[in-house]
Image 1 (cartoon, helix red, strand yellow):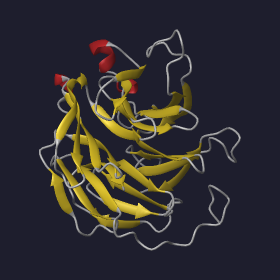
Image 2: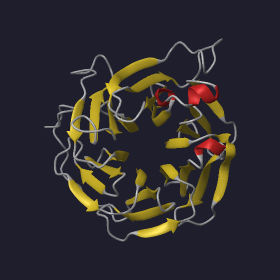
Image 3: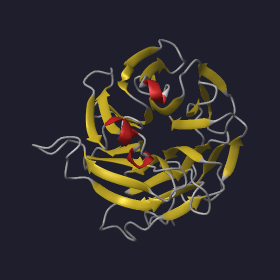
Amino acid sequence: MDVVSGKPKPAPKHEDALSRLFVLELSGGRIHSMKTDGTDQKVIVSGCRLPDGIVVDRAAGHIYWTNMGVPKLNDGSIERVDLDGGNRRVIVAPGITHTPKQLHLEKRSGKLYWCDREGMRVMRANLDGTDVETLVQTGEGDDDRRDPARWCVGITVDPKRRHVYWTQKGPDNSGCGRIFRAGLDIPEGETAATRSDIETLFENLPEPIDLELDLENRVLYWTDRGNPPLGNTVNRAFIDPSSRNARSLEIVLGSLMEGIGIALDVEGDRMFVTDFGGSIYTAKLDGSEKRMLLYAQGNLAGIAFA
């Protein structure tokens, strides 16, 4: 029985030979592609400028990722390549976004969503990089920028109920991390800085980073790179007040070395997680059957499953 949905777990499916993981190596500025068991690893893109967030549009044959760049220079960017690493191009030029972090693809609306850390923003744009918008602004100017509590990091989207979720990690291991939710569109007559529909879902977290949403079961997953026992973990929680155990946080995976990236394969009842220590893990969605796929791979950031 699945503890999240209350439904019987599906029988394990045969491994899809075409399924791949795409992993960002922040320290080496590279994108790695591999099978979901960690084999057939290859570098498909190099020369990235501190890559952090990655998404894959398999149907269109594209990979998108964020480059944090050098925070003090305000030169972050977003790039796109084909699945084999060809046809590389910049779609959001340096300076349009400050320090872009996790990236989310919302295919139905044709939008990319991302968090901008030192920019203190939640942002989105068309898939070709046009029509860049700021949806949430948590601060303005250099004084605010020095406050990590204002830094937006992880992001995910619920297109059906039209919500965006994001993390603000706070200072390192401060216990000031928070997860927020707001509408996909700014309320009429308000601005990204003044909108009144922002809801705090969780607070007093060690250091929440990346987010993933299981839309079918209405469960939010996130990594936390703070110190144990609450940090170095993968967490999950129901997001609707009507759900069983609503807003009850559950740690499903621990003993990470600063957890960063997370990707869900809900149909296959599995998650994939990266940490800053250079390891890639897989486990069931309830955290059981944890298995290390690779280790000592450099400082790893975002991960995508396709």
